[in-house]
Amino acid sequence: MAAARVGLASHALHASSSSSTLVRRLPHSRLALLLYPPRILPTYLRSCPYVSAAPARPRPRRLRAMSQSAGTPYAAELAAAKKAVALAARLCQSVQQNILQAGVQSKPDKSPVTVADYGSQILVSLVLKMEAPPSDSFSLVAEEDSEELRKDGAEEILENITELVNETIVDDGSYSIFFSKEGILAAIDDGKSEGGPSGRHWVLDPIDGTKGFLRGDQYAIALALIDEGKVVLGVLACPNLPLGSIGNLNGSSSGDQVGALFSATIGCGAEVESLQGSPPQKISVCSIDNSVNASFFESYEAAHSMQDLTSSIAEKLGVQAPPVRIDSQAKYGALARGDGAIYLRFPHTGYREKIWDHAAGSIVVTEAGGVVTDASGNDLDFSKGRFLDLDTGIIATNKQLMPSLLKAVQEAIKEKNQATSPL
Image (cartoon, rainbow, N blue to C red; front, side, top):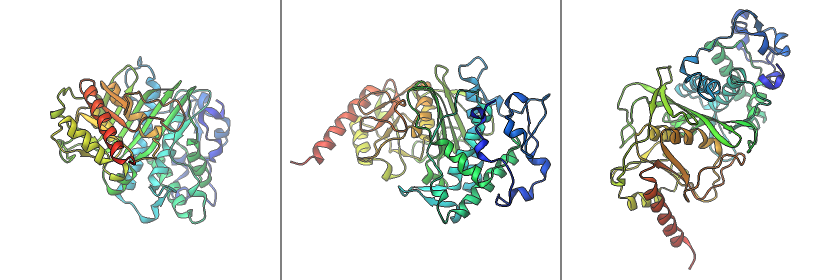
């Protein structure tokens, strides 16, 4: 298969004196365990001393049991996406348990980035290339790039990322692949695609809710597939979200098991299962039709949303419950299974929404029977590249509440604009 299928030629799967010390700690046999069918083992991998092939045996697909029916559209893509985010979640959980100061950076926009952001993106890209059905080209629209890691002073965090990724791959056991530091940088830059209205594009937020991640709170690995401009599947790995319903007042668990994986395929509904691989269960948005009985989700960080506006909207609707403030697209997952009734997002003026912040979550909600629109009631358009061009904000709820919600949103926005406009 051509390099476009697996796309790892530039990622230098080799050991060298400049590579992570991981290669010196692992026996050669553990780095050469995976058995690939000959049809997917590219020539440049056959010559690599850390990859072996055995034509008579298929490669393992350990998470295949988590996929939907084989007859489901995009079933193979969905299985690959689930495996990708589950592996990335494993890496993220490890990092969150022991965040070191050396593993935290700041992007130009001052939001924090950890080794887990980069490592998650690398692992998702790798699994998609190895597991998803072949296509003419591999396109990944993702949040991170390697620019900061190529600067002077970034050597330590690059070393940490390299070692973490390689350790996660070896511990998982699915692939006999070793990344050098240059390979890590190249793998991160796989996510530079601009997307667009034609072809297939994977869309990834490797850690959505980085500030929540750093606090030890909610975050999500959010992955979606866009096909000819439409989101056709989405998965959300939420390692800290209870598998059961969360409480309306403070986000506390109603059950003991933590770690939820939400998934949806266009026309096939939405499901939730444990990150550890429990049988998937169908989910649906709540059936509340009286806004007085509704509760709503919004961003945890006040800097991420105009909370005065959302308070005005809630007041107009007569909502009695206080807002549930949690980080990341975990809000979409919680809404999709009926933990709350409304999701409101109104970023501050000048902010441009990125497609990776909403692609996976929006299809999970819509396939669960909900509605996701901008503040004018327009469907979200993911076909225009890396950004969403929309009116003011994003709202989501069930079909019964959407008319009254949309009316309250537009009234609140009008009042806010009048109050802030010059005389």
